[in-house]
Image (cartoon, rainbow, N blue to C red; front, side):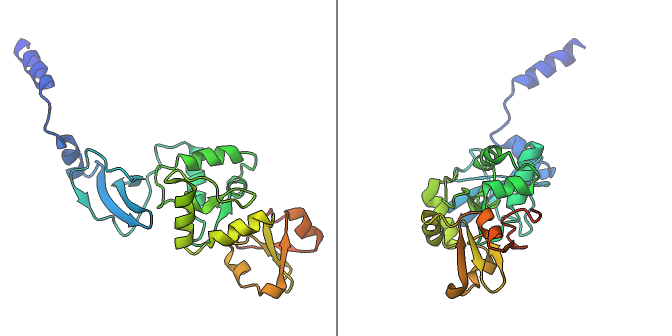
Length: 231
């Protein structure tokens, strides 16, 4: 027994080679693996395990000795987040490329309409930026807002790359235009909605808020859901 205890103590003093534990876990299919992702903002390093992608960032993890290709079918492992944070990020994944939604929209969609500030915090702490597009969420007044993966400039750049026309969004925000209505369909949308983009200029009707749109006899778009459907 004494010999066994001594051997165990000696093993405890031995430091495994750098990356050894990660290689063993990876070989067993339970450890983190790493890939490089080229984006309009530069190179991001993505880590994932068999449950899905867990993180993405600009800094290469010190223990990422081997960099592989990211699987084409990307899933996300959000198990380390709270239920609320997971709901926020999964809802954000539903925002189409080239469109934006507001923090209040996300809060309403997940059934927590008063939790706008908490939604902002969850998105600011998004562990998987770019892949989970928190950049597609803007302020309620239409201003682009901040971005944890590079600030407003980076957010503007990636939205522009995706075709969201952030310059137009900022101009509408300066005019206090939150919604665009169509004279022909009597429907109002968020400005970046693909349906709003099909409205001919002569048929565009700007609205500063939901009350003004409804008072004019317009109903909310079923695609971008700019307001509650029941009023």
